[in-house]
Length: 322
Image (cartoon, one colour):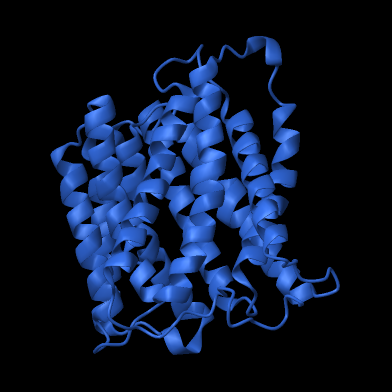
């Protein structure tokens, strides 16, 4: 079997038709949300937030989690007797490289660095704004994704939510560590949106080989980052390394396979709801595990973003954007 022709028994990026959701679908959905939300908690533990002289540097965290994830995905791919597309297939490999860089290396680095300063639950809240940036990009990239007046209003409301999420205190001190960290989270949000657009325009590929290939590309690209850090200056314990292992096996590898399984069982629209569930799950986990709480502006910003996303998706008389 080649990677060019979808197989009926193997999930691909082509979403299934919307249908009634079973209890099993919802169980898998919330399991996926939990695993993805756990990435922010694992990252907090790996970098040991708030302790500049303790924990793993972001460069090591990113490279290790991507390498572990790539190895795990290769095991899944080989076990299912699949393989990535041939290197001569430039269109597919362009999408794979784009996903590896824009969808993994860049956002992982920005989020991991930001979480040395900000809470895991606040970092997760920024992911809810991804559809806002996707709607803007899709308007210019895809003829069937043009924004209407209603969807444009939704985008503007969403941006108001992002500004509210950023908070007046951060706006006053743009040179502060917290403000810079939130700017990094904003950059990661934009990178995730760009990766969604890359996936939207990519040729159809089998899901597991696609995920394996772009995570492998991301891992290889991240390896030079390891040498930017002096090992003698790293003060990390077993809990930091276990958190990195959790990042690699859970959110980076297992979640990819579970996501592709759910895409095949349900639809891409159904899975887009994780953009709403992940910040909520991350906030609950952050509260019970670390005592994290959010300010009024963060909660208000999240509400505005969700309202803006809904309007951006449904403002065109039932027409949905990417």
